[in-house]
Amino acid sequence: MKTIHLRITGMTCASCVLHIETDIKELDGVKEAVVNLPLKRGEVTFDPDKVDEKRILETVKKAGYKAVVEEAERRMHLVQRNRRRTTQTHARKWRAALPGYA
Image (cartoon, rainbow, N blue to C red; front, side, top):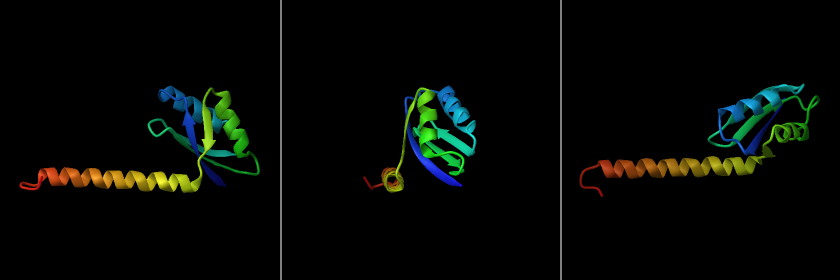
């Protein structure tokens, strides 16, 4: 099994997510497809002997959306950036909540 991560554009609602997930899951060889609307990301686990990345991307395109495979390095960068932002946000909130520390 292989897992790929997608950046998906054009989604506006939960119906879009359901449409994409359903169409991808109908492909022979796809084990799981999960799409996240707020993050505009998707994760697809599939058997590369039965279906390839190109076919998955074509399926998303036929559904009316655009998708590209997200590189692992880019994903790691985004995860790290989001962690830093979360840490900074929490630190600001703690500082604001402490008396005499402003």
